[in-house]
Length: 383
Image (tube, rainbow, N blue to C red; front, side):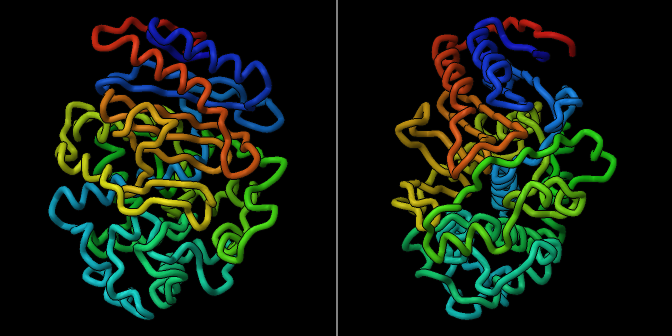
């Protein structure tokens, strides 16, 4: 198992290695930062289902909805600069969006999955996802499925187009380009919303689950959100999917890139020696916009501005988090100034997969025990 872990995090390395050895994974990566310092960066297994390509230090993979955390951070960056008012109606930036009773829908509603636009009202195909103007125009023209702001209903794919179009209208560039030039490149982070072809050889193959999410008895609203259009591993393993900007689920990266980018929020807006956000803007993300049983997920969720907030199973109330289909996970503990990220290629079954919680729970214990101080890194295998 290559990589490194601070000696205080040896238990984390052991749990991660056990997950790989036990067959729960094909390939995976795990990264943890504390006070802006990377204290765990591990990877292992294989980048393909046939187990012929070892997972390398620079292997990247589709992380599904962990992409939403990057899109939300990009919106927060524009808010920090005063270019975007998160409480303003979307129509201020995107006038066409006001159609069909959406004139009072705010940017915050988009970020908190409470805009009533959890899916497209009209049947669409995968190819329609690659046509940004068409996908966003359809959303602008349709009526919400429920009264905006009254409940969350997870916007599986639509959130990226909705927030992304607001970003495009404000910045004059796509969300992928703003993220790359303003966040990823300054940090040297290997995360992409729209993957350049030059990075294709480093991408791990997504291994499909034995049973897809929302495959049992579902409501009409759930079926629409999850299956319009219907996605599978052959889609997300395609060059077309990786190249497109799909800001709610098409991002490509690894645990290192996710943890290091999100350390901006964990450390009061500073990462890599550079200030991206103010402490106040970081804290805005914690402001709960809507809570209760989510109309799509069917579980209780508290949504802030672009992230789920707190919860009994998180390390502190001031925690932001979200995960991706199949098992990827991103957690930001603002109290401990820590980030935790997990990215893998074998998808788990259903809407919730707990594989990431084994090493991350061990990491919570290690962070609590370590407190502050100097870390000593222990190498694991070849770099």
